[in-house]
Length: 394
Image (cartoon, rainbow, N blue to C red; front, side, top):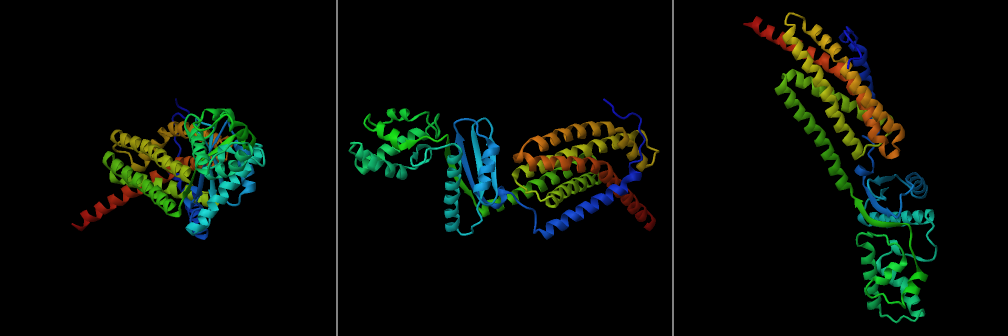
């Protein structure tokens, strides 16, 4: 399918406005990064608490995100888990010492439970069986059992509480039971205990399944691994293109892709958007996308060199850019529309990922035409001038 036929646009003649635009945006992004002390990292890279919550039905994510944002200070992230009624709630922990972080973790967990309990109308004054530990369960049942005429030692009560919690946590329940009557089948639970359990316990519509802390050391390792992944991808592509074409093509492609990555990160800084692991995934996607677009142009240049041996190299490059214009427009246009829809309608969780793709596709598309191609011409002219200088010297 061809959108443009027999075009003869002078792309190379219009390269300077785009090169100047790239320089301005790159410098602005770098200045912004320096002034702000580096990129603004998301919770994945800064450290914090990750709380896995399972719900009895599909949770209202936006309402939960809003309620938690009002109740808890610092950054809050709420992400759905595909294929389940689960959420992963991230809470920023700024305290530095292990003791302070442990206290902050407990406080954050309590605030999350309290906020969710308020939202889902858990009965006040009763023990939430879905979110209680063994010691707290024993403490809440000791006196009611005695008042109800159930005689148990602390050891016996602890064993019954342990069996009840194991029943609750065992799949397929995995933290949520259908009703308190289900506890009648737990070993150690007698019919005399059931009225007490129904009186003292309540079942919230959610369960805190797991709480873990992402430490600054781990986040530092994640940042290093993300950087190495990007550099390894660039190095591998440089080697690939150098073997498939010439080293000048490989160097030009890597410079163009590096330009795309730096500009996209700079735009994140200019627009005050945090960088998390989803953004890193988007940047790696852009590295491959931009490189593929550039390779298509380079491949057409190589084919035209064989067919048009007597033509000037810059004319061959310009012709190749015109011949691949339809393909570039279709590929970039459709991908851009998809990513734009993700950005507009994908919700807060996908904003960073979609923004990186939208910005990267725009930058990557014009860099293939107005950045990579001029660099190839410059490198080729530089190498030819070096050869002429060597020949003249002899």
